[in-house]
Length: 204
Image 1 (cartoon, one colour):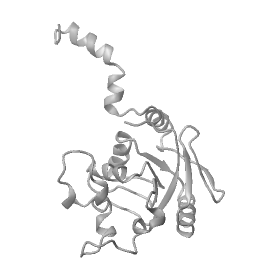
Image 2 (cartoon, helix red, strand yellow):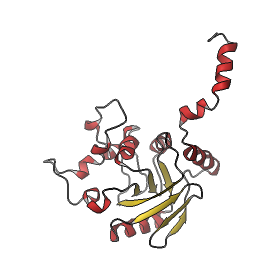
Image 3 (cartoon, rainbow, N blue to C red):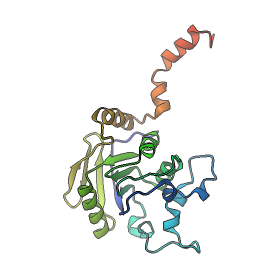
Image 4 (cartoon, helix red, strand yellow):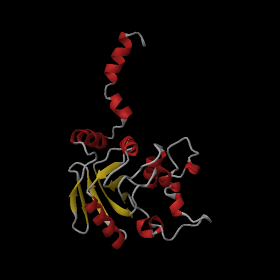
């Protein structure tokens, strides 16, 4: 998993609440066994018209948001089913940070497992960021995970957390900074695992 320390990128505003995982990546597109390739189907029901043409009213079809890497979303983002394809699609499209007032629990955990920073901000700050991104297409934000600080070109500066619980926040922040998912965390103790396997006779 790629470590995350600091990112400056274009912010894309998704002014909707309770966005579920089927809206993030519709079930009809879950036909791959690898993680790559899902970005083309991100928000497919909104991005494309019934005839398959891009929906001109959806923000990701605006050239100003083409290279967006930070998504500004509404509360309870990622609700619905537990499908891990949702963060896969977001990451494959190019999003490394999602800013929202709150996240659905399983989606939140899946973000950490895939190197996406779920930045919690008060709803008032999220709305300001969305408004700035709407009024200034191509608006850029800087997300500094070491300082847990988010800054934009309009003068907004706000502290964020990656988890509401302070202790969990510090643990998850450290994992994101070091690029450690659950497997990576386990491998930090590889010497102890090897010693145990030798002791119980699993390996010679």
